[in-house]
Image (tube, rainbow, N blue to C red; front, side, top):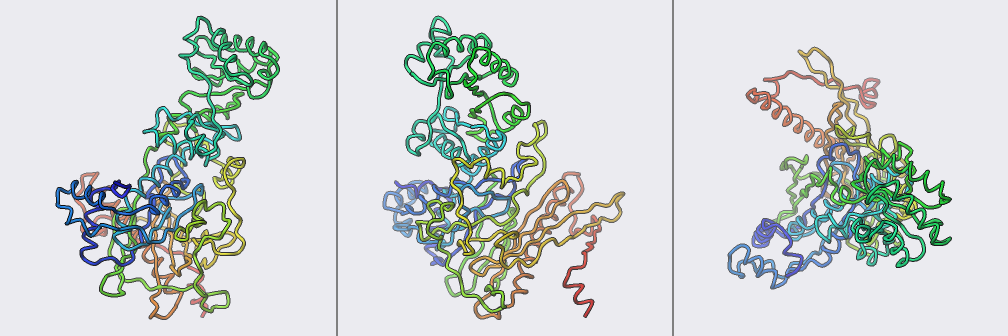
Length: 581
């Protein structure tokens, strides 16, 4: 059997039905995260490498058909339409290591409908898991504020493969090394490690253990000093290191603290090492650390040189999963060219009318020729995608500092607070993370950011809508940000964020111009924006209905039956122009 069988059963049943019905036209699916985890302001895209490897090798063979038939308790002949199915479509994705926000596609698959459907489960698994771990790792790098961070997570990750990915994603985020020997060897990473408490306990005295370890591993050495009494362990380590010669007393040697009040113990250890004439011997801290603990130690001024993070990062303990989805945005009917379009707000999928297709205009207002969507050679930030003609990496549309506000209750301040994530990420990963290739005025096959340098066809920002509720003892102001931008294939996309002050709703809308229709960019703007606003309105209504039910009130048939509301819109530039005319 191949990886084609690593899927949910309903993917197989749907793909089989599509093939039997002749529904093999192209379909586009977008993979995105509906909402950011609590206390998170951004995610870091990851998992593209694994997803591309899977799609490149996706092929349903006879053994796979037999496995499907066995799982469904049906004769293999019923599943024969799947035999020989392989991926022949296109993939467009955010390059690994880029910041993404809720509702923004991390990856888009365009392929014959059965192929795109069968790939859903595997691709979702790879992208979702690795994005969660990479985001956690980056937060640790930001919290460490320039101090090295290393990965000690293998022993408690959810399986050896997850441990391998944690080491890889730590390197992506800017970690200095990993304890995972297999990952270090396969990926060319720095292997790091010291000793366990059991090693010290195996000897008669702590000093015997330290000397035996140093004899077996000459040169710089790290000694675990908190097996019995931490301060006494530092004194013993100091004696051993002084007697080992210059190599052991210089940079590279360290003592490791793994328990207790790490901040206070680090201060005491630093004082003891300095008094012993060992100012170059470093201090490594470990033991249940995550970005919050690291941030607290850094802010306290603890003299810790290296932070070793493990379990909490390897399983992303505070946000172990992402609410990700793989939704279709358009399916071509077998009988003709008419499109069946699904508009999704992340919680429901709504049938839509065939959207018009738009084409980009140049600065003179003339139609611009379609641009090729192949990743340029040498685009280091796109990773392997530059070598795959079907995969096109794209920069991220949106803002790097969006998302839910504030850390989770009971947590220390978010280590990323006050630090623009984009700049902080670049600084934190400067030594190890591949630098993105600079834009040279060419199209890299994906969306441009909706604002900032290099933006094209940005036509609307900041709708400035205020919603005022009647019959209430107070007035609330909600802010709406609406961005319109055009994709490389002529798709007009709208991104709208409604900020209530306590919650942020994000929705999208798209529009295309059909080849037979007149190319009127303003119509595309209106359709995309209208669909995005319609989706966000539906989300508000759904939220209101849930709140009504939660308070024991019968659901209203119409919003006006329960609450009266009106919308006051600030005049736009177009309104003012029409007034003057």
